[in-house]
Image (cartoon, rainbow, N blue to C red; front, side, top):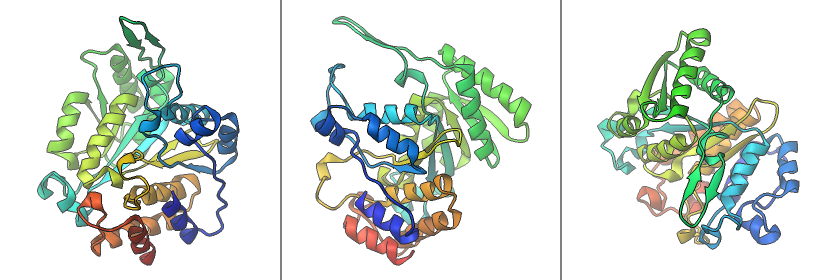
Length: 326
């Protein structure tokens, strides 16, 4: 976050920043991952930039104890953020950093549109000594609004990912997506892929995708898999958006990497690219967003490599390299 704020002030020095504790830090300070005061501050803002919030200190299977992830779910629900956008692009300079062959990933430029406030993450949960359950629920309205986001974002095709051969929620999902496509977006191509097949195709032919539309848990898993196309999960940004009435939330896809915390070697590029999404979708500053993305690309083309990308650059060195190209 410190590196991200340095970049943000460099590209748009009139932005006011207000900082608050969240997740694990908030549990330590207040006993909860998200306080009402912080949620109110988020609602008053034009955009919310979020750093990684968890760590082994707060890992627990006790449902009565707070977890950092509860803060994430709470802020998404509290701000009405139902659409999670995760762009995945195979940057030419990083083709050698991916575990996949260059000819397989070249030209990949896709967007995962993940529904964010429904499904199994938000369904009722039960637990006894002998069993446990997690309820997966979707409404037609939830599916309609996320489908519209995907169709509007598509350049040529939306691939809707479900498990309609097994799950009733997926059957409702597919029927609703087909109806929205036919009535509102017939000019966009639409195909349907079962989630297990989609996971395979993301590895075998990632460049074939344009927009991937899917529900909450499938989107969480598939977008992390897609991160390997870029060479590291340390390269993947995200934007969580609502109906446009309130602020969006912008954060790297990666977690807190507790094994390297405090060593100054974390890759800041996912945070930088999340700031580009914040500038574009949160503040309407397209030129500044493009400047950040261009600076990241040129720094990588110039040889910048953090440790997760097979190099030795520290967080500070990576920040300086990007700033020098801004």
